[in-house]
Length: 90
Image (cartoon, rainbow, N blue to C red; front, top):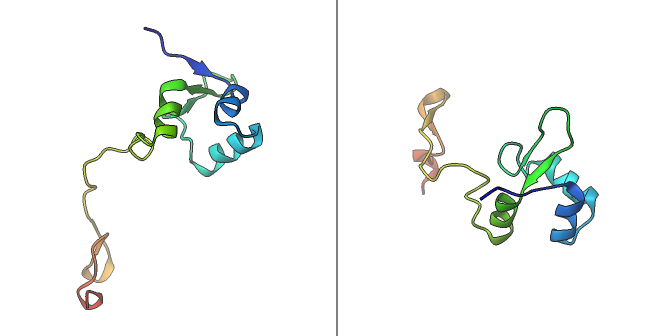
């Protein structure tokens, strides 16, 4: 089965918003390049219908991020990014 790709105007019609709203969501990263939409060559963006539907239904695991926890990032002064500091855990 072939995947269906949509234009910005078609996505706006499905979501019942303006084309400017779709473009703003693209700029803000709500719709992500390579996940929700693609730019083949120099063509205008095309949205993957299945990814758009997943986003609408809330099944969009944070725009394609894996469900596995990220590895900790050590920071200056000995704490790890994403973990609560010992002195702040009161």
